[in-house]
Image (cartoon, rainbow, N blue to C red; front, side):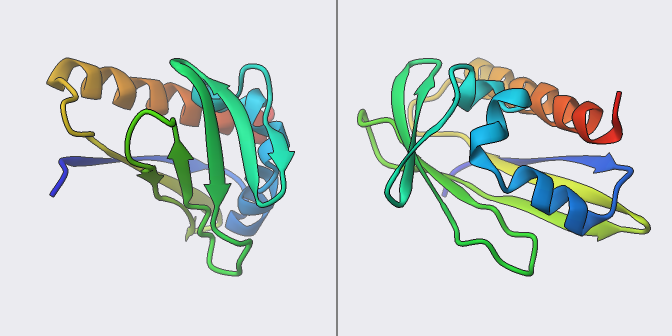
Length: 132
């Protein structure tokens, strides 16, 4: 089993509106800095991006009514990395939850850095969707 950390953030918008807003991988560059500074390009059922350590291929779960937007990152240097992502109702707003798994051979420091990076990306998503 891999060590895991779930990072969540509350967003003051209806959960379905949040899900619809993030269900556009081509717009990830606006908030998901780890995958998309140069933008994502669709290639059939997958997306290509320039990750922090080189090119990556990303596939997403199909669009659904449950707020699930899991994605799977293939760096071509090891096993595919699962990144569970959920959008759920939180009162009148939404909670966005992303689970980060510590990969084999990853130091505790690198895992903490990646978690902090995901927190910054989710904060950027909140600012974008709340108009801040």
